[in-house]
Length: 410
Image 1 (spheres, rainbow, N blue to C red):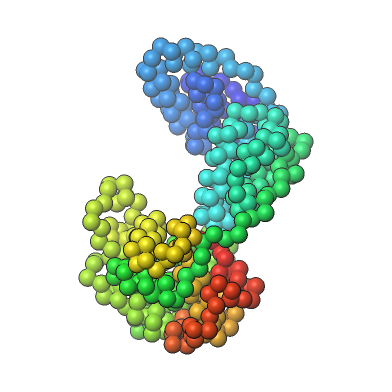
Image 2 (image 1 turned 45 degrees about the vertical axis):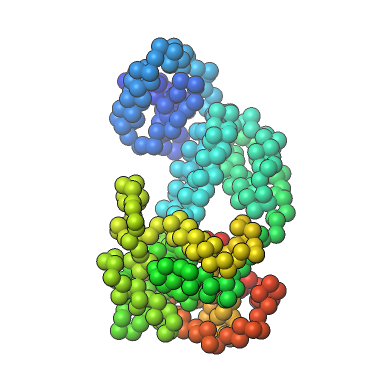
């Protein structure tokens, strides 16, 4: 069905779909349809009228443009603008997958960020007018790694358009990504890690140790809470953030060896009153940053990465590498995986601890109940178990399962 004019808000456009869903848009002075993120018509009316009042208050030129917007080009329900198709795709496909636990919040947010690019690029273009050439030109300057993220998403977006009857073909089908460039960032060496650690502040040292021995991602490091730690048996429970919306999230209980426990115990004994294991007392903090934190002394992901990089560069451990090639905080996970492997731990042991073994996706639920329980894993690596001198840091061959873990992004 076509959008209808709402007499209570002249610039509000309402699209009614056959499945009963309704979409509200505000027609901007330049003709763009801006999605109004609400399911309530009354809220949409109020928002549209507020926008019109604000725009008219800005001058007579805007007034004229707004009046012109009352008579836009005819709307074709069979060939809607891409902004409508994108809005529907986000709500009818990606949001539903998120609710069903088929994708994580992190995946949803990442795809939403990419889709917003298409809204800027193609928003006003009628769906049927988008060509393979348009998409190829948009991706032309992107790296192979980036293209490998965009192309599957574009294919899915236009498959949705076909399913809704907006198109007969998929312009993204013929897109081919460039060959991915060789990895630029180098790996940590144990010597480099230890040198950075000596230059890092105490809270970064603790975080580096927890990352190395627990193999957890940055998002899980900053979410570790003292309430998740059992001092009596030296264990910690972790519901991995990347999987928390999955049907079977990765939920593990790590029994800590001495090296990991010492770092965690140091966090628990810190003189900074904060319930999160990764914490620090900031020199200054804006209201915006404070509002984004679960606790004033908790640490946000970007801040953690930047402070680690600051200590890394101050240490001079990787001065022989250009900055873009220097290993990051995330690469400590890869170093830990290598250390466990070189110490003789089994693939199953390493994959379970890192949250990838089949053991972490089975037996999550007690039979007949919906109560989730963690899978028991161990983290008892000691660096004394590793003959560091025998490691070729640039040419170490790893089993495919471990290699995939090492190359995994955040």
